Length: 145
Image (cartoon, rainbow, N blue to C red; front, side):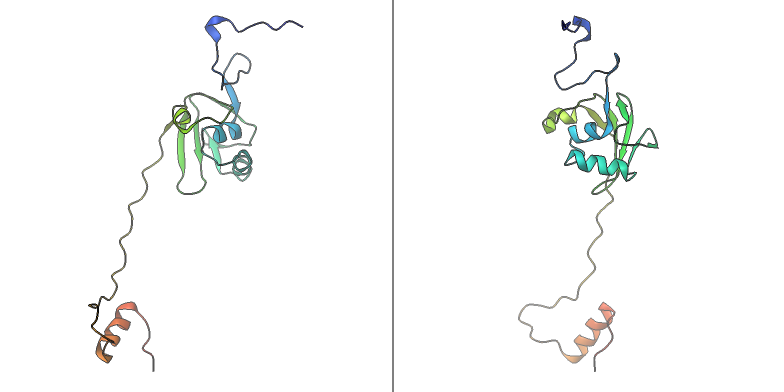
């Protein structure tokens, strides 16, 4: 059996796969390759659990993903929304992986400010009965008897 080389105009990068003349690959493998999931099995579990959507549709791990598809992943932290730029099948460095998708994730919500806590000057000693009652009132605790 003789193997024919790729035509010069259809060369594909080392990390890509080729399916029926179109660049496509498994969604779980792509999520792992571009470092949206820590392991490939975690990406497969996320797909099976319904946490991955491609173009708005829940998909199985073997679903084909192509350039231009929108992938939504609910995992650790906020939901990630990415548009596929290049399909790769092997895990690559973070800088190469970032070039394989466009991140359209919504910005993280603003951090909530800490609840005010009763502040006493250092070295002021124990709180008086009046100060203790005001602290308990501020914290919403019942007075102890």
